[in-house]
Image (tube, rainbow, N blue to C red; front, side, top):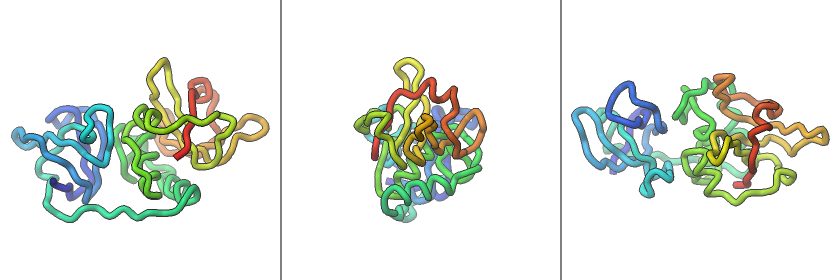
Length: 201
């Protein structure tokens, strides 16, 4: 078992221009499956994924690996801690596969906020939806998750910041690829059209 010594993207192939899959942070553990030149093929056990039962698979630069100490996650309490952690990312740029304050995607935001309260979720939005029991959309409260899909594929997740209002407004925080940042806002109309389910941590 190795850890990484700096924020590092796990990518789809051993190449600098390969698509980002997820991002590991200093002290997060990875299991090295093989090496190829300057690259290590790894799985990230803490980033659960339907792609591999051992953890999120992909490649990262071997130079980022270390035998250093594991990361200690500080565990907060409940909904307020979850929302407080999510709000620390407001304004952070949207980066596909990102999980840090340098750039984060929608499921990365949920992954890190849940981690802060001691809840370990899968890394991707579709896997997060599959791992949690659905709740009725009328029962959503602060800290619950909204999932959005086109067809069978869940492609987006957001955190509810309040129960739906009497006017149907659904306040939420999410990493929005269209706005290219983490924002807190009423659910936009185009998002509402793809809202399929909700879940509680």
